[in-house]
Length: 562
Figure 1: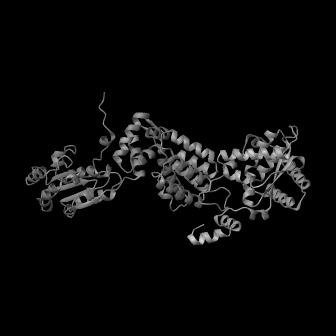
Figure 2 (figure 1 turned 180 degrees about the vertical axis):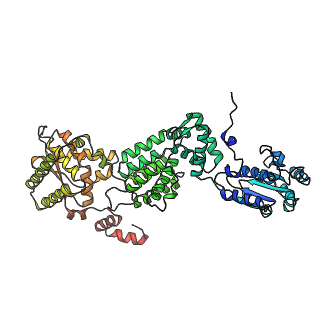
Figure 3 (figure 1 turned 180 degrees about the horizontal axis):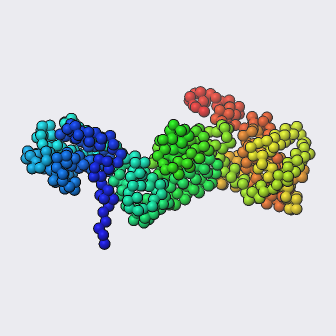
C-alpha cells in the first residue's frame, strides 16, 4: 500500500511563484534579495494557513541559493534553523539560540532562524531576545511568524520589518484547487470547488484538508451535491428556492421549507445568517458596478442575476434588516425557532398587495391561505366563457336583492369589490361554487336557531385563539331575510374587510349545521354605528366618564394616565 501524503504537504509551495494570494509580499521579498536590501529581522503575521511559514522557508533557501547550487530539499544545507516557540518558550531556550547565532555558517553567507508562533514566548524570553534581535551578527537573519501580532511586545515589533499576510480569496483558492484536480486526474464541478473554498474561510491549508476529506467521500468525481452533503453546508439552491417562495408570498411553503432545513440538522441561526448573505448577494447583483463583489461560480452567478431581476431593492433592504434583527435577537430568545419563523413570515409578506401601506411586522392573514380550498381550486378550471356568465348572473342577482338605501350602498360596494378589486377572480370563483348548490338540501330554520349557532361559532373561535374575528361577530346580531339571506352590519371598513376574510368558514359552518346550502351572508357597512364601540384607551375613558362624571376628578386627583 502506497504511503498517502496529504495535499497540504504534497503541494506545499517550493518557490515564490507557487504561493497563492500573496503576490505583493512575494514580489517584495524577491526584489529585496535581488537588490541585497533584506532586513535582518522580519515578522510574518496573518491568519492561519495563508503561507507564512512556507514563505519563510522559501526566503531562507533563496538567500543562499544564489551562491550554492544545492538541492532545494536539503533545508539544513542552507543553514536554516526552525524553532517552535510554542514548545521552546523559556529564557534558557532563547539563550541557547543566541549562543548559536554567534557561530558563522560553514557554507553560504547567512544563517536563517525561523521562529514559528513567536507570540508564545514568555515575557522574560522576549527580553532576553531583544539585544540579539536589535544587533544580530552580519551572517544572521531572523524570520518570526505569528498569527497573533497583538501579543508581541512593542519593543520586538519596532525591531522587525513587518509583512501582513491576507486571507486567500475564494476565487484564488478555487483556481488552485482546479490545478490540483488536473494533476490528480479528478473531475470536479466548479460549484463544488467554490463550496470548498468558501468553507476554508481564507486558509489555503484548510482548503486542501477539506479537499482531501471530500475526495475520500466522493472518489475522483466531485459534485456540488456530494460536497454540500459531506461538509454539511446549506446548498445555495436552498436559499434560491426559499427566496422564490417569499417573493410569491407562499407562507405555508416557506415554513415547510424551513422545517426541512431543521430536519437536516442545521441551526436556525446559521440558516438566517446564510439567508441574509443571500439577500446581500442579490443586492450586489442588481448593479453591474458591484457585480465583482459577488464571489460565486459562473453557473451560480447566472442564477443570482436571474433572481435579482425579480426582487426589488426595497424588498431586499427590508429583508436584510429583518434577518439582521433576527440574528441579533436569536441568542436572547427563549423560543428561537418561533423567532425565525416569524421573521420568515414577515419577509414573505413584504411584497403582498404591492405598494399598499402595511405595518413593519405585517404578516399575511392565515385566512388568505385557508380560502384556497380544493373546491375553489376546482372552480378555477372553468373556462373564460363560463366565468363571464357567472359575472353577469352575479350582477343581476345583486340588483334584485337591493331593498334599503343602506343595503344598496353596501351592495354597490360589494359589487365594486367583486369586479374591480385585487381578489376579483377569487370572489367570482366563490360565486360559481355557490351556484352549484342548487340540488343540495335547503332546510328551513328560524332566527332563534341562527342566533344560537352564531354564538356557538363565536365561542369556538375564542377557544381557537381567533379573538379578532370573534369580537367582530359579537358586535351585532345576524338578521335572517328572504331566500335564506343573512345580513350582518359592521361599523367600519376595517371590520368589514376582516369579516369578508372569515366569511367562507362561517358560511360552511352554518350550512352544515342547518343543512341548508342556499345560505348567503351579506355584510353591510353602517359607519353611523361606529360611535357605539370604544376601541382606544381614550375612547374607553370618555365612555366611562359619560356614565360616571366623578371619574374625571379621580383621574386628576391621582394624576393617572389613560
